[in-house]
Image (cartoon, rainbow, N blue to C red; front, side, top):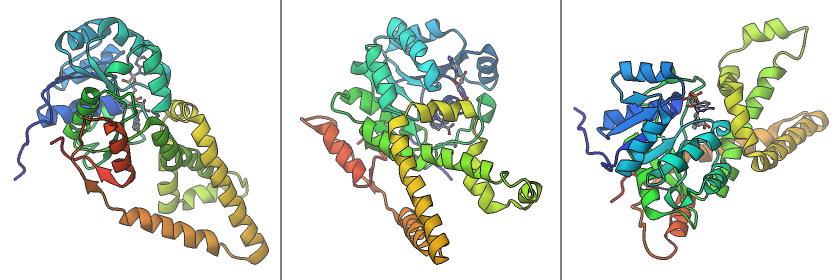
Length: 322
Ligand code: NAD
């Protein structure tokens, strides 16, 4: 029998954007007993969420004034191109609310948050979970169960904003990994954004031999499906996150291309792909064997943000706020 535990905070959560990620956050918070409500630009999705028993509205100003009056925590869960408009509305209607987000890049978002004058209330967030589907109809209360959820700890991150952002991730069933925005972006360029580009390239490559195109499609099985799964994501979402992390993604793609060129040269000159298969297998095994070390975050004293970043680097995860 599972025991319902108390939420990690009782501060209500205001979710902006009820697509796959924001809608799943609203569902997961409801499951955890955390007070939460949401806004969606299209009335249809807000109506669907209301019909499913959630507190949802298509009136952004009214939703934000509610968050402002109560000092609630806002989670922005819209794509990068929609951020500036949403953040301007937050600055106008909810300057007293706390702020986090679920966007897949962190440096770009932090700069937009600063331009809106909201850094003093903000800690960035990124749930490391998702599917290739979009919209309220794809939402799932269990999407974040056991996932990692980055909460940014930069030198200007306010402790209360970090604590509330972490509480949202914890109440969604995730564990928290603290990281700086720039180091987050460098890491996700290699484990997510370049993976999307490589998946698109593999999907395209399968069709490039006209003589074998139809046969290749009918033979494609688990390895093709696994490697190209993320190519099923809406192109506009992939474009938005890759283009907002261009510098780190260029570095990652340079390394991927160098690996492919070296593997091709080894095959052409020596008839083997042995080097990359050994190294790739070893890297994948290290990932499979990686261990997480739970720790309780200390959110005061000089340099607490640096201490959190170091703990995140060392494999530390936050499973409770103490
Ligand atoms: P989605 O398409 O399912 O939902 C997008 C949401 O943003 C919808 O509520 C939509 O109404 C809203 N929106 C779109 N354009 C808007 C605009 N101009 N103004 C106001 N609202 C607008 O997408 P999603 O997968 O939920 O992605 C939302 C965010 O979560 C993105 O920033 C994405 O980077 C991030 N994210 C996605 C995944 C994933 O796997 N899909 C994982 C982690 C984080």
